[in-house]
Image 1 (cartoon, rainbow, N blue to C red):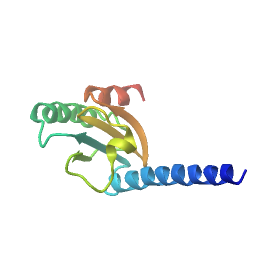
Image 2 (cartoon, helix red, strand yellow):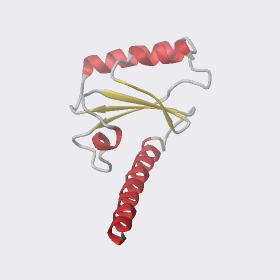
Image 3 (cartoon, rainbow, N blue to C red):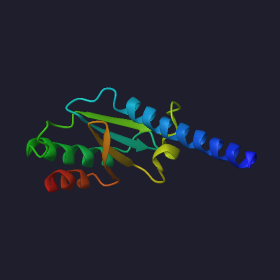
Image 4 (cartoon, one colour):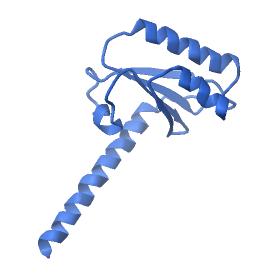
Length: 126
């Protein structure tokens, strides 16, 4: 019976630490957030020019059409998961293919996508 309790406590500790790590990663990613919104783009290559151009066009549509009432998304950050060592984003967010975007609003994940046009659709729905 003692072994079972020890095992349960270890599982709770590991689960709690993993969640805490996720919360710390989100805090780190959103620390420079303005207008309560941040778009984080995870990639596994130094630069993906066609993707960046498409993403910028979609963000311009969100800004120009005033689709986000609380203000534009002014914080867009790119993280190369091969270079970034502070957190294991692949594990924390379950990243499997790239580029992968996570939209944070008020410290919460509101959209996860690989397609820039889904950002516009997200705000058109709201």
